[in-house]
Image (tube, rainbow, N blue to C red):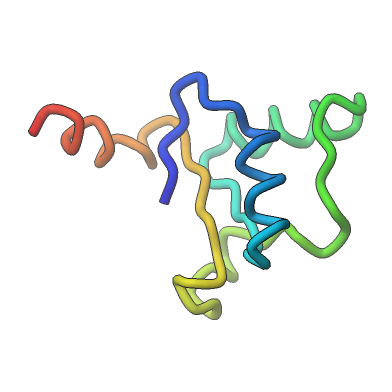
Length: 82
C-alpha cells in the first residue's frame, strides 16, 4: 500500500506496469483526481491496469499496488510517527 502525500503517481504507475502489478486507487478524492488527470492526458495508465476498490480482495497482494489518500491513508501517518 502506498500512501500518497505529494507522491509522483505517474512514476508509481510506470513501475507497477514494469513489474506486472495492477493498481487500485482508494479514496474519493484520489479516484476523482486520477480520473480527471487521465482524461486530460496528465496521467498515462495502461488499459486494464486499474482495479476497482471493491475488487481489491480478489487479487494477491503481490500482484497489486494500492494508492490511497485521505482517511484511507491515515494508517500511514501512524507509521511515519513510529
